[in-house]
Amino acid sequence: MTDQSLKVHMFHLMPYADLDMGYRENYNSVWLTLPNSYFDPEKGHALYNRYLDELELGAELGFDGICVNEHHQNAYGLMPSPVVMASALARRTRDVKIAILGNAFCLREHPLTLAEEHAMIDCITGGRLITGFVRGVGCEYYSLGVNPSFSLERHQEAHDLVVRAWTETGPFAFEGKHYHFEYVNVWPRPYQQPHPPIWCPSQGSVETIEWAAHPDRKYTYLQAYSPFDSVQRYLDLYRDSAERLYGYTASSEQIAWSTPVYVGETDDAAIAEAAPHMESLFNVFLPKISQTMFFPPGYMSNQSMKNIMAHKRAARGGQVIQDMIDKGIVICGSPDTVRKTIVDRHHRAGFQNLVCMMQFGTLPADLTEKSIRLFTSEVLPGIRGLNDQHYRGFERTNAAAE
Image 1: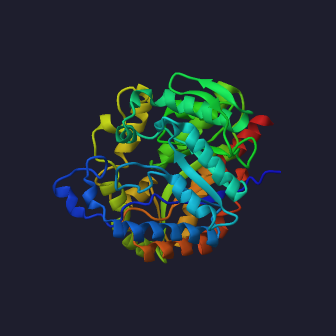
Image 2 (image 1 turned 135 degrees about the vertical axis):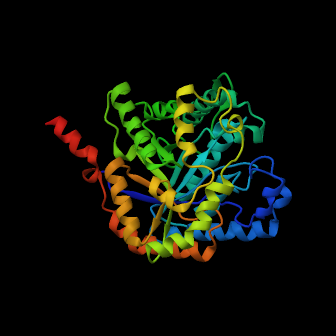
Image 3 (image 1 turned 180 degrees about the horizontal axis):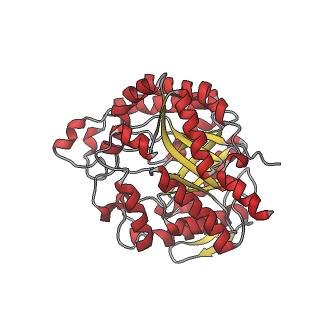
């Protein structure tokens, strides 16, 4: 029987935390246009190894999963290849899940290469990989010279190609609109059968939500970087799509939420320690670029654009930490406050997977480690037992059934 209790994962964005903030005199964004002369390889060496150490510490102290992701040509996240990081973690950990949240298969001209690499990691770890299929925002397409207008088409076609490569006996030919292969015959095959669990991180695109909820997929939908009212609305939309469009009840295993988290000894101490670094994440590292670069024409439907921009305005630019706490964009406080906040959010949204960003912006190593240790020792034991019976929707579902 599948364990339906809350799973808690640690996510790392791996920002260039040593960024010279004087860049703002000449540049308005750390994405695409900030010259790479601002990157110091010696500092990069120290940061990469520090960040891997932090993920390994999270695994050692009890997180259910450790998570990495993909970004290109920016100081926001130094992981153009999350597969490299996942590979480094594969041999340094034993039981923890390793989640690549996500890899933009659709940015590649040859998605089968990533299919092979994910299968390798799954075999090395004995089936501990979680694969994230993500479209990526417009900036990523401009970084790699891919037309973002075909984003959704390429995403869905790359998905179909990779899943078939993992599950069907090769060789076979694949002829799509964007991808053409005479021979699809992936070696190795994934350790997990039919394939690793697939998650879909998203900003709240209706198209992605409905696609992920389809009964042929039933993928875990991960909502991030939003005021919690928006998070709850999108997670409810996923459940509603499953029920209304496809006639089934989505399980809590299909519901995930990601948020920055900081734990201090007291509420006041936590806010004082986290404030400059949490604010740097939203005010410095998140893109301050035109809407057409972030969500280009044709990237998504008008309705999705309207929905996403509404909550993006609440989570970008000029943020102060207390406002972010009040809006539910971040969680920050004493162990008791953080625990109570998670319990309340779980009651409202019923997610089975919580993804905690424990390092953010310019947060230094000592504060990151302190927060991780406080979270795992004083918060984690109090939330591990959360399950469907603690979710408000569980009561309504049971009442309707009766």
